[in-house]
Image 1 (cartoon, rainbow, N blue to C red):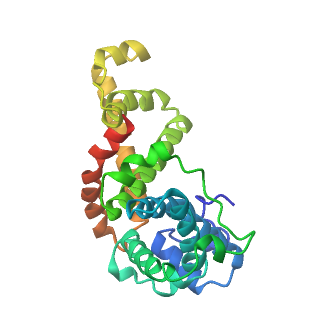
Image 2: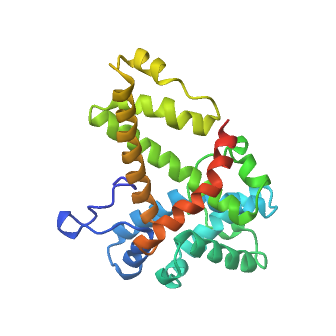
Length: 259
């Protein structure tokens, strides 16, 4: 089962909304172990790097931060302690996760290292940590912003890939390339966008009006996809706009980091 394809868990007749808060509720209430495992793995995939960045910004060296990241997910997330304390009414899931992480650090400092406490064979598989990629997030901002920076960066990567794949699937590859070169790359790479004339010539688009309409089409798709992903981490639709405003604080920094 793909971790990002959980809308049909349990079959087409039991489709559920896969927001992070509803994932928590499913794990808490459910008895299907395979489903619980898949849902927990999704949380691990989405949040281990933000947790690691938070710990680095708290001043922990690389290896200790990785060990404590392992310990947090092993003891708190996989141990279901996180789910027992979940309160969707408190808003953002990532804010709830940060509070759980702060509580974990208080107790973890009083115990042995996470490396020693986790049984062999039960350590969580994490991607290789790219020190160069995470350097800015771990050294230039508060621990909370380091967490949010890593979360938003990963979110944007997922949105970009989903929109790109959808454009290719729907026969709108040229739409995507025009949008990427005119809108996305200039933001993320801090470079001047090509002129509409250049794009029309490059992709054989009959006129600039047509090219502009293509960009608008993908902008709308990008916005819809972004809102869908943001909706996964808040308790209500009303909070999506708050999340978008929060993201605006980080976009310039993300763009600079990617340059």
